[in-house]
Length: 163
Image (spheres, rainbow, N blue to C red):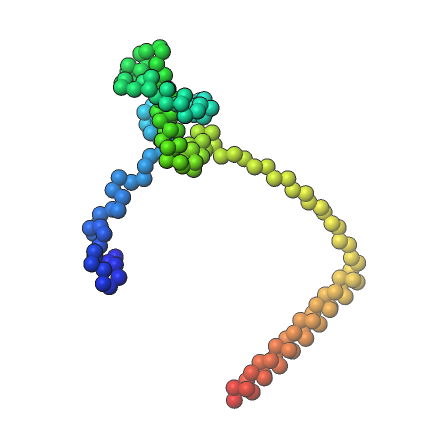
């Protein structure tokens, strides 16, 4: 759709071309799942690393810096690659100052918190005799008839005003 009249740019994108060709970024959980990690492994890593501070996360990443996944997995002293990946994602979120990103990571791994709401209900019994109910019904019908009369008078008044 072209811009308004007087715009020198014309179309921002070529016809049929997406404004976001790479698409939405994959979540860290999706990336780790594609690498073969199970949900329980990812959950365990997140739960453990959420207790680390920034310096501890940076140290954890530096122990595996420059090593391939195969090298990391062979060394007993090395931190698992899953922990390194999770630590990087937490530091990235912290550097950008995006708490909603961290919230989303926590929701993906742990799940949303549940809220319990207590409610109280009272049952009120209404009892009326048949005669009382008939009297109320008769009153309602009389009111309804009166409203119909008023409505008819208003319509007659409008008709007279138009002529």
